[in-house]
Length: 268
Ligand code: NAD
Image (cartoon, rainbow, N blue to C red; front, side):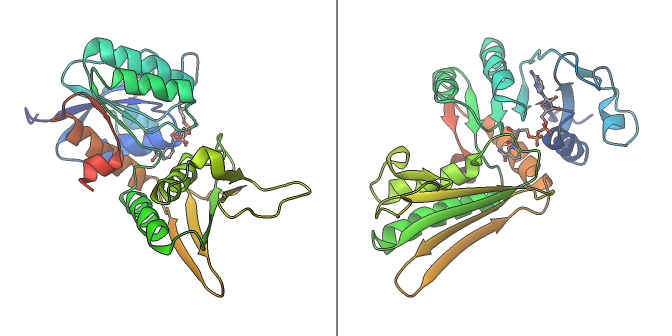
């Protein structure tokens, strides 16, 4: 084995993202699968990770306990409650953590900020390079267009997604708000409904659709008088998030403790 191989520990290994991550790790030249963790009592505990994705045995069994080893990187795409426990374990072990889990509460996000004082943490609602660029473009457009252009966000995801709106849609809203001197939580209008739904000048609308197998679509519209700009991103396949998260994992090993996002990883 290449002595410079980076050991990756995947949390949420049996999930849609977990299996995409196992595939990407197996297909890479510089990464090795250190461990796979999933929910205690869930199906698949004790199963070989290679078999889990329909390939030959790897000799790494899915366990229900995260034991981060120094020198490895933990990549967590699971559930907010699990992520909350895992971040503490990574701090105890001094191991960098990449978090893709969405739907974290404000308290859980505060915990990440505290733990970021001890280990490098990369937390992103969307690890795709394309979406990271979309966030950048959203801010540039909002600042250039000014208050006369009304921003609306539309997102579509598969029927199994638990949180709504998507973490990415909220990040797009934040990017627009920050670039136009607004506080997103003050102006966010989520799934507009009700009797008096007349638009206020400052609001930023977010609409969620769920169904089918869409990996994720986000469209940001700036609606002006007689014209409209749309910035859209469509995810064709989960491997884009897995590759982005593993890029962040490689990057994290050279970083000081801190709470980072994909902008930092891409140097934007
Ligand atoms: P999924 O339901 O297919 O997989 C989640 C996995 O986590 C399951 O195997 C589940 O058993 C496991 N899990 C639950 N509790 C656990 C625990 N306590 N310890 C360990 N594992 C546990 O979901 P998914 O589609 O793979 O998405 C997982 C998360 O990643 C969601 O929050 C989703 O929104 C997010 N996501 C983020 C990005 C991104 O780029 N940041 C991209 C896609 C999905």
